Amino acid sequence: MCRPDGWYRGIIMSTKEERAARLEKFNKEIDDFKAKINAMADVREEKIETRHANYEERIVTARTKRDASKAKLEEKKKNAKDGIDADIAKVQASFDGMKAKVDEKKDAHDQKKLEKYIDGRLDYMDYCLSTAAVAMDEAYLAALEAFEAAAEYEEKYEKN
Image 1: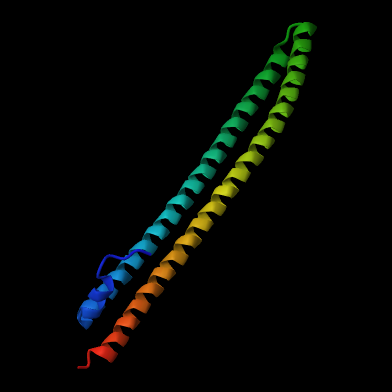
Image 2: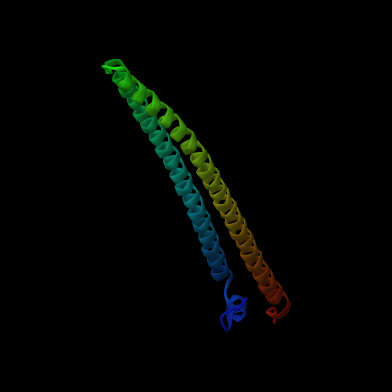
């Protein structure tokens, strides 16, 4: 990792208070990063819940429309004046049933594709969060090693 020129020199020549302030600043940045990650997770969870609510609402709307269509069809059957109208209604009902079966098959296929896409996105999110956590741990470890080396340097060479 590339560091600005004199970065180590700044740590070594700094006072204990400055190092403590830097460490405190670093810890605050880590806490801010963790808060951002948690906020992102909360936003994602809210979006998922909103989508589920929207899907449920669409399902209820579709069922309502279906029930209304069935009721209209039944009304037409009752009000048919002759056998031709009744036969047409039967053919229409059969056609609607076939169309519903085709739509069900299409919806099942689309649902599987969407579920696979959602699973992929969630897996990618997990991977990104894991990578970020590892990077945070590595950065924290590097800072601790730098502070330890600075303390060792002071102990060995700044006594005189």
